[in-house]
Image (cartoon, rainbow, N blue to C red; front, side, top):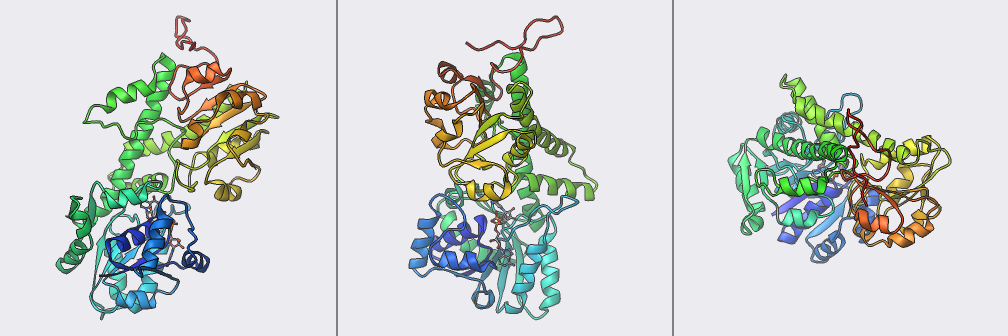
Amino acid sequence: MRICMIGAGYVGLVSAACFAEFGWRVDCIDKQPQRVAGLRRGEMPIYEPGLDDLIERNVRAGRLTFDTDIAAAAAVADIVFLAVGTPMRRGDGHADLSYIFDAVDDLAPHITGFTVITTKSTVPVGTSRRIEQRLRALRPDAEFAVCSNPEFLREGSAIEDFMRPDRVLVGCDDDRAEDVMRRLYKPLSLRDAPVMFTARESAELAKYAANAFLALKISFINEVADLCEKVGADVQEVASAIGRDRRIGDKFLHPGPGYGGSCFPKDVSAIIRTARENRAPLTLIETVHHVNEERKLDMAQRIRKALGGQLEGKTIGVLGITFKPNTDDIREASSLTILPILLHDGARVRAYDPQGRKHGEEALPGVEWCEQALTVADDADALVVLTEWNEFRALDLDELKSRMRGTVLLDMRNIFRPQDAEAAGLTYQGIGRPQTVGETETNRAGEPLIQKAG
Ligand code: NAD
């Protein structure tokens, strides 16, 4: 089986390397010459744990190659995957399909023999049909079928997710293509991963529905966390209690500074557009989008409040800028909303991220970058944890405190224990936990609602 993977980004590279690991021969095409040249030298354009070894092994075995030119790879391919970006379109928030259709145009002249063309990119309902129509117009003579095979991997654990998926989803309405896709995924079905075949529209929509639901779960627990703070409950305890209910499940019940990343914000926005266009509005998901946007602003407000309402002249140390740990991806991360507000209002912002600095330097002008986590605390009036990298969990709180000018620790991922922070002399504020920073709020009768910890 010969595979041509168009796009060497997070999804394309991981998928190409994993298919090669199954034993298939994979040619991975990317239009960025520097990216391809780097990959040929063994340099990874992205950070994903384990990816460098997997690629190195499969390149050495002769199963994985990289190129900028699609011609040769497309001509011999049984399957061509489209794994290019589908970012949010400026203006209306829909998915920008220009990369998809550019790739289809590049591919069309080189289709030789029966070829299955499959979208791995997240694309709106109806895109497979549109690709088919476009290819049919460009190459009326070609033999091909278009399938949808959305990818559910998570950055940071992408290889494990690809190799042990909860399910593989293939939208397909062609028997020959179904045979090819079954053969492709046989190594996974032999490991008991369910390979589901559905209508193409169902597969396309399922990807968006999955991300919208996960975003909803995050926004739900974020709002519950706000309520916990008002009534003296601890969201960790609430999440743990409800998560044990199998109807609810314990995943995606971690409160934080709002979801980000390359998928949730744009996919939520795109499914909202699709739903409106089809006059079946997803009002629940529209609210999720709104709640998440507000949350990021609210987090900046919390920092201001914890510093007495004034950011001018304050130094704020930030731990983590990526949208989650184990990735260098900062697309739509909450840091991109929060840090510019702090800077705009006169704060000095010093940040450290184990992998995010390269992208951060471009996206966050004005931020001072530290070489290690501890030095972020130097002269800081407040420390803010935005990403739950493991290396932050073991930080010595006494040392952090001794380097700081102030005492405020805003732990927006709840990675520290409040009592440990307080024992180190820090004034701790987590998310959805009883508060020690800020004013005690009262109910209508003037009784305190928030119990001061300790
Ligand atoms: P990415 O931006 O990391 O990578 C896309 C790559 O495609 C880039 O290297 C770009 O140079 C290349 N490219 C664009 N047009 C090309 C063309 N015509 N020919 C060759 N190469 C081309 O994107 P990504 O994060 O890998 O996402 C790709 C798709 O997968 C998106 O639709 C995304 O929504 C979806 N997805 C992403 C994730 C994730 O965790 N990143 C998970 C599931 C699904």
